[in-house]
Image (cartoon, rainbow, N blue to C red; front, side, top):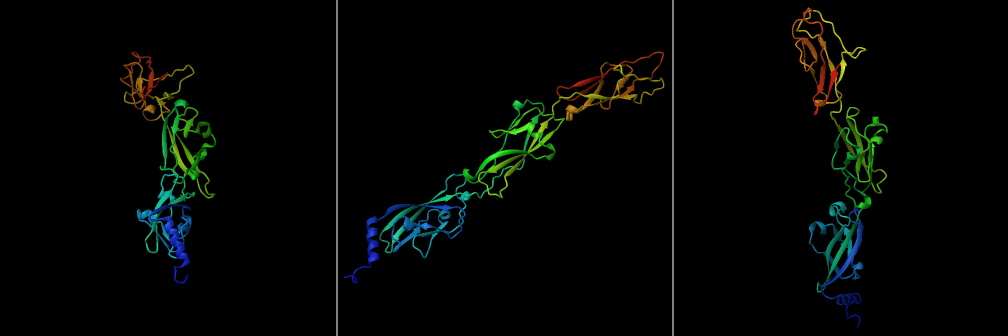
Length: 341
């Protein structure tokens, strides 16, 4: 009787299929680490679906060519799923904490009389293969000098890491990019928990017009040879008109005044003296102009050079003493000025 009946294994297969029924469904889930070498075995679908390994054909139902082409079935081992192409989690599931690929499989018996649909879920596990980076090469911020520290807060850009949070950026620190700062910069700047630079005291443009720092981003569980991402930060101190001009020439005497003796032969075309004032500010705030405090019939002053000239020849019997005050003003808004003497 045995020789006239079907093969026992095939008979069991038919019984198994008949129990499953026509067009039934199953679900299988595999876990695979990204960047696993191509041709590596993911798992056996038939085993996981508790289907017979003999007499069953499994194929991928093509719905997404890019996704479906990532895997293939072994031509030698029934139900054995292998990696066909590189698995890059950051490309497959960008900006997502979970990377779950969904494939549809069809399992048929040899006669294609019965079929079962298998929902295949493949969880692609992240590895720390992406480095943290900043999207800009330089971050520049301008702070007015003498601004209150309470108002001097700088919001900083954040680094990007394509990996999941487990391997993403975990911490930031602030460093000096200028070795000449020493540790003094730490008295001025600090990095807050809100990812901001706090400035602890007023900045002085005349003392230092710019500061160069580095924002450093550290990865969680970074490989030993991985370098943290660094973003150069330049803090520019904007000049304010906080300095008045200061006369540097001529020098006052012990009485706080200045006197000059002239002869009648002094030419009206030649400067008799030059007043010089300097302003520590920059641009218009530091540009100095000169004028006489009171109008004079005897002398004039060049507003740019500070040169004083006679308006007419001197006559000793008419003019014995000329008194005047020179005013030096900057071009700030509002202007600051100083008088001599």
